Length: 637
Image (cartoon, rainbow, N blue to C red; front, side, top):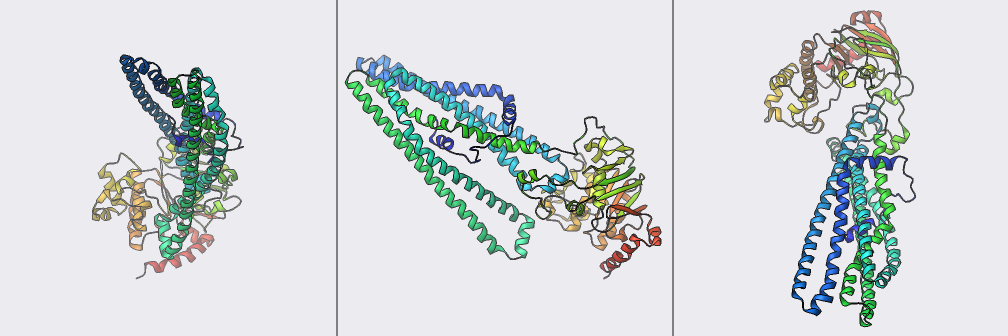
């Protein structure tokens, strides 16, 4: 039997605000396509619903026969047979209910799995620009709340509409067959029942929306404050009491809405009970008159009384079927909106695998400007571009992405295999952007970037990036063990290979000194390690990958003078025979580079070796005199 809670959920409940809303074309077709692999399960589910509804009708009808036939005739054998059938019908209904729930769970959880994996796969393949423009929390909400909402709305709506239709149809047919006059009397009361419940439903709808909004705000506060960076900021500014007061206000609103929703829900249940009681009373009142006049048997009256409660809740639920269906489609629409976001860095259909790589990099008239944010996408996924401070889980946004016009303008250069090339220039000159184009985190607007003569747009991104290792200024570590973070570069690496990479990065002694050694959990984003330790662990991870091309983006910026010297020495040995692209503001670390490329406002203004550039007395010489002068005191006792 449909529970009263189910009727409440269907009655006037519109949390998505779908009344009057137009669903995007194709949403129905795509939602139906997702259910196609579950057609056999859906058929089993509906058959179980039908058989369960029929099984429920057996006891009322047989109770009538017991009263009309077995008791008056004193037929104990008939009484025993009818009682046994009633018990068997009850067991059958219970078993069918379990089977129905099993099918429903299989379909629902299967849809969650399919949607979630598809959405995760699409999102994690999106270019870096996507993650710098949207809020991480909005993405997570789509992958959790909206995916589950789509599943629940789909299976819940399907279950509600199918079950209520079957129950209503079978019950009405049985009641009409038993006594049509009492059936019509029961239906006359329906408008009296629906009118007040719809008013309660509208109020519950408004409260539900408010509750969702305030819950979302409360969750956002917790997400931002209850991580290492947020908690540290609160502590440093001594804002504990202010944070508690703000959170308390939001939580109090959520509490009050919950209380009011409970009261409105209880009012609905009371109304349902009253109407049901009135309906049953009227049915028995009129039925009793028919029994007294001899037009109806007592058994038929009892059977009608048992079945009448089965028609009010399904009828009420079906009056809101459109809202339920629209709510389901809105959830799917929100999921599809993310799946339909285009990926400009997707592999071409004829993309080739980049196999063995020598490491020759050729830049030919490279021009690039960061694409503008998609306003519609931002409204869907966060409302505004996320700055690095707002989206702390993403890598730092290059300065050029926040500026108008080209970040790189007709840059041409050739880096031979095995060369160490330094990129130098003022902040915002395009150094990090140039490195990102080599790994095809973005595509050039014009010109080309080639590896060993292969345009990076003509090879698969997976094979391209398998030959490139990057150590950024703020390396990201997962909340996992040291060994797991290292093996992210090469899952099949042996313990000996891990140890070799860590010795090369001078992190082995630290690991050996830890109580859990390789099994030490580094904490969220590696916060249990110092900046220099994180950096050396990231260098070890790249060394373990053994790429042909290595990009070091301020890779030694967090190291003190002693550790920097050790790592520089290790890198000098480890990078032998590999192409290295080094981005550094500390110019004293790149004086031995085979070639130095000097960028200014996106243009390549100088190139050459350290001494040659100093002798040219251009931008590089100015930067060197200015920056190296500020570096020297750091190493002085």
